[in-house]
Length: 246
Image (cartoon, rainbow, N blue to C red; front, side):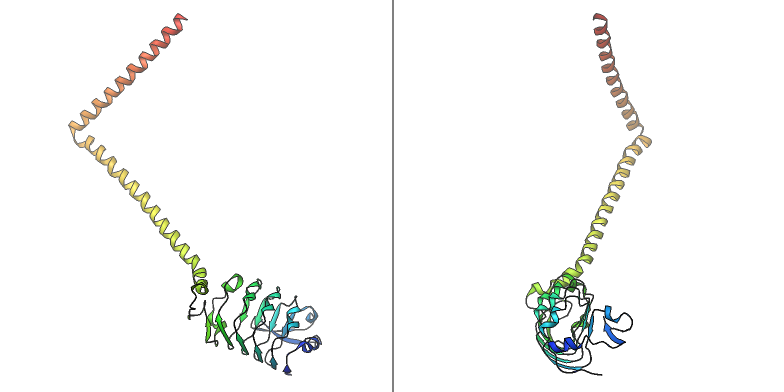
């Protein structure tokens, strides 16, 4: 059975008269509820002949988890009060005649995991922030030729509205930066090791294959040893004399 007529506050009251079983669409998936139907906090009025604007009374259903008004003839702007439905996880307003901009309050729906606004007459920039940044599939906005901003290919004139692409790509850029830094550190250690090896073999090779260098090196070692030995012997003698006199 289809519901026809203008969508207003009265239809919300009639919606509470449940049948024993009901099929609803949540997050694009058809589900049939029976025994637990009274506990389901959903509203599925999709594929009907509803017209008019979304009634303000609907935004008073603060416990609503899923709202599906797709495939109707609803019009007007999407109410800014849509952001008061804080528990909403699924929102489907596709295939209607909504116009105007997407309300900025939609970013307040922090539990939202499914969104479909396709095939309307929406225009302007797509809001940026919170859960909305996770929706990277452009098909949820398709059919709105005047929309712009991430994740659509059509960019807005205001550069700020395109920041979503940078936000989503930020992790990839950070990963690339970390990879570059890691490569630089790795090359630094490799160059240090190579420098040490080259320096070591220059000195050791000279001592090993050049007799004059070897003799000069060991003479220098003997001289250093003699100087250190004489200094220690002098200190020890002074210390011994001091103990005897005291």
